[in-house]
Image 1 (tube, rainbow, N blue to C red):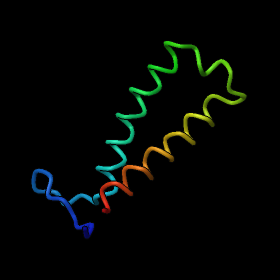
Image 2: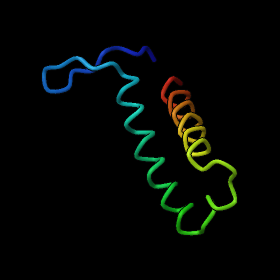
Image 3: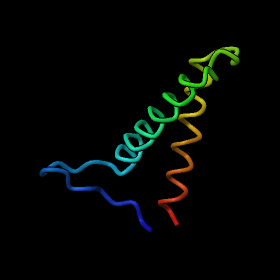
Length: 67
C-alpha cells in the first residue's frame, strides 16, 4: 500500500496524522485499563512509559496498515 494524501473535507491530510489519531484513541483505552488495575503505580516514570507505549502502538498500526 502506498501512503497518499487523504482528502478530509477538502483539505489534504498526511496519512501519518490519521494514524497518530488512531493510535491516540487506542492509547486512551489502554491507559484506562491500566489505571483501573493500578498498573501505572509499578512503573518508574509513568509519563515516559505512556509515551513509549504510544510509540509502540503507533508503529504497530503503521506496520499493519502498510501490509
